[in-house]
Image (cartoon, rainbow, N blue to C red; front, side):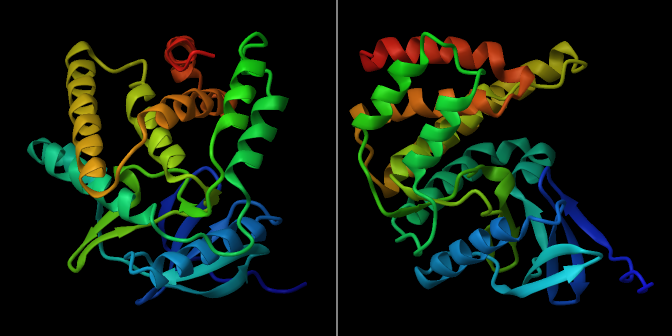
Length: 274
């Protein structure tokens, strides 16, 4: 029986992967699943494309296997994410919201690498197959999706302040396993929806809820402001993309968001004329 690999110091964790220290200059992102290599390969390709376009992201450094889990070696970063900093220094919410928007707009100008999944195909499959999307709304959403433009830009898929690390050398964008090829307006729409729809934990007190909601609203306004200083956004396309992205967010089944998302979907369908 082969010896197990030595334990690693965990630096962070998400639903699909955990990040550990590999050495002083390198971190390793280990998939939670033994068949998770394709997601890591997607992330490595997206990171390489972003770096080639001058976007500051962690350098990918190859693949490993640790305790039977596939892993992606990455440049190790020193710093905190913008969301964590804002929690400690709420007076910086406007500054960091605008920074998030500007960085996202710049990323959206990046050509996607070969091999990334098409955004419209990914959305269509998820929406068509999910019972989380209301039956009456589904064909209207899919019709809107078919009317939206095809594009070849790099879309992050989960761009928000928690995925930007502020290092001594400036901000660094992280976490690209959901990267796809598509219209950057769709990626912008998803980020606005993430900032709008997120609910606080149910045991949060009244004052805490007030602070979170005010802060979220300011972050959203600042993010939109920052994005629009660096990229133009077609209002009609944005309205249609919002409907599609709201429907797709429903397929991710976040219970705390469902009621809010359903209301947003109903309003969005009316606004988009679907």
